Length: 134
Image (cartoon, rainbow, N blue to C red; front, side, top):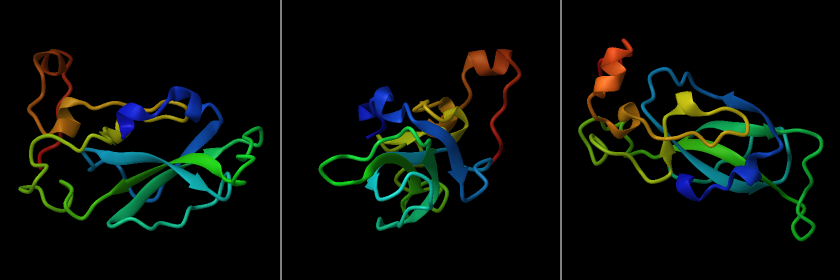
């Protein structure tokens, strides 16, 4: 779950790679996975699709026990809002979901009105921030 990601686990991230344009995605799910390398595209074994992943710098050390690296992956399930706008997550978002615009290397990101499927807040309107039409 996104809320359970410890910022310390993101210390060695140097870049985020997006496999799709995130401009039209209200949210992505993020998880920490044990992966065999620091940089290459990870194998994907979940239902749904891989949207992006983190790249670790050379100072990242592999686990002594498994020889793997703890890296973030960003993904979407088949029943997420981008595929089923009137479905389960028409309003609200999964617990591990964050607005991809809030993500940076080393920053775990957060939910926004957009990622929750709600209308823009008064503060967003005052600042002139608008959400794209669906």
